[in-house]
Amino acid sequence: MAKKIWEKNIQADDRIERFTVGKDREMDVFLAPFDVIGSMAHIKMLNAVGLLKSDELTQLLSELKKIYQTTINNEFVIEDDVEDVHSQVELMLTRSLGDTGKKIHSGRSRNDQVLVDLKLFTRHKLILLVEKVNALIETLISQSETYKDILLPGYTHLQIAMPSSFGLWFGAYAESLADDMQQLLAAWKITNRNPLGSAAGYGSSFPLNRQMTTDLLGFDSMNYNVVYAQMGRGKMERTVAGAMASVAATLSKLAYDACLFNSQNFGFIKLPDEFTTGSSIMPHKKNPDVFELTRAKCNKIQSIPQQILLITNNLPSGYFRDMQIVKESFIPAFDELFDCLDMTNLMLSKIEVNTGILNDPKYDYLFSVELVNKLALEGIPFRDAYKQVGLAIEAGDFAPDKNIHHTHEGSIGNLCNDKILAYKDEIIKQFDFEKVKVAVERLLM
Image 1: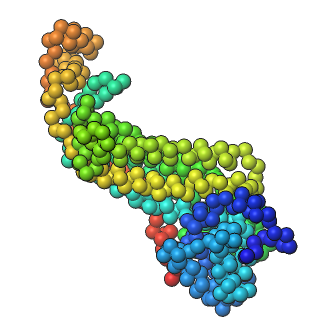
Image 2: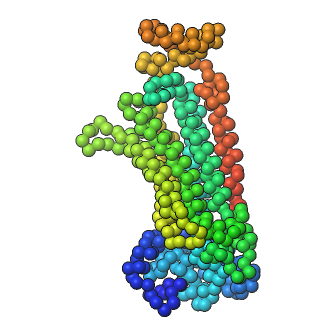
Image 3: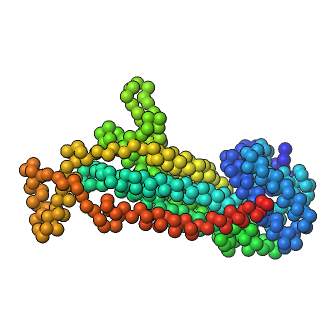
């Protein structure tokens, strides 16, 4: 049995071992490639400050690259009697290089090691998340342009209210996601700061060069105060989860609309038959299960910031094992949100739009405000025009004019889709993903 790196002469009780490790091995597999990358930067710094010989650095980098490849090939395994990813990597190095492998831990703790792993993991996932949100925005804007002239009812209180359009409907969700991108940018900026070198939360007597590891890993800056670097655990995850929850809220609302609009009572859109599921008893059913599951999954994702808050709230400064549990909520959430984004993008790209919705006379009253505004433009005071049209409706004399002319920014006739795309693109530029990608590629060369 492999000895824990923190053990002296007393071995932990097996029951304590099972309880304290919990699902950590399972979660830590996701962190493995990032643990290796962080270790590469760390040992380069150790060599630069004289704590590691150049030949030792060469040997360690060679072995770490091999371990990294196992993580990419899904071959990396945390052995049953090994506590976590950090211990597994160190064990593999020690098996290959003997005592040289043990030197990798100089100047750091598993506390700052997991901090940097989580930062690197989250940064990687945020890059993918921004790419997927961007792709969905592009699809929404494309559909908005395609169907910009197709009208549909707008609702308040679930009562027919005023004319809307598919151009507005698709575009509204695109702009909502663009605003969500702002929250992702804030989350990125908090994530992209280097905690490495804070050790167990109080720094180290070794002459560490934290700016060097910051540059090697492509971080924007470091978490300067070593106590705050530790306090940032849980805060970073909560902030990122909040941004993810914002994206999820947009998807959930869109999914609800799609379910509603796809129903026979509305009939505004139709999903391709192959994108629906059937009933075991009703042969006519074509259910929008993808959107229903998207709604449920996204509502679950919106609970994650609260889960993290309740785990970490009111803890004093310093490290506590409570933080371990945050991984179980946080790490799997990315792939679940990715699935929802991918499926929503696919569904919306194939959706069929009803081009004659407003031919149904039950929607005639949508145009009452249009008539009120027309009369007001002709010089009748708005309140008098409102009353005149209201009386015509009550008398059954209202005749709608469905030729509407909205020209102001963001309206049916002036969607401002180009402005929404420009807004989104300007946000994406501020992430500066290229700097991060180049830094990681250099480490792995």
